[in-house]
Image (cartoon, rainbow, N blue to C red; front, side):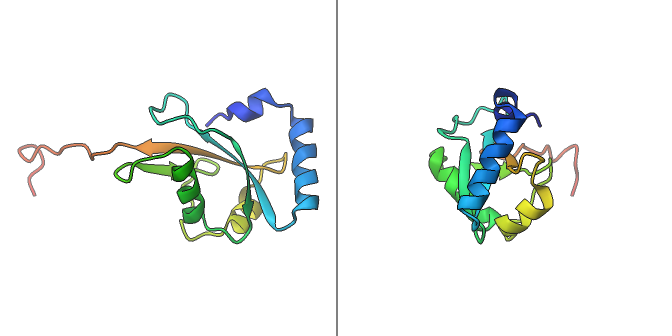
Length: 126
């Protein structure tokens, strides 16, 4: 998944900023969170987050849900390196395993349809 933020900001600038952030806030993780292109979900008001290292992925998803004012019946999924991380994983472990060369963790998010696709019982007998 392509990152618009990475396309808009040169590598050297992103790397210097991430290093400065990590030096100043060693207990925080720099994260870039963007919606997947062609998604019908609301655009998020900010892309850069400085999250506590002991925050779980599930708690981070909750923060993003609140930022985009997502209704309870809709779901979103956060990906890291095109993988869905466990909701109980700490952001610090995600950072250590998946940080980009520039020092950020890039997490695109994708909405899930509000209702599951229907299953035709005639074609798929139980």
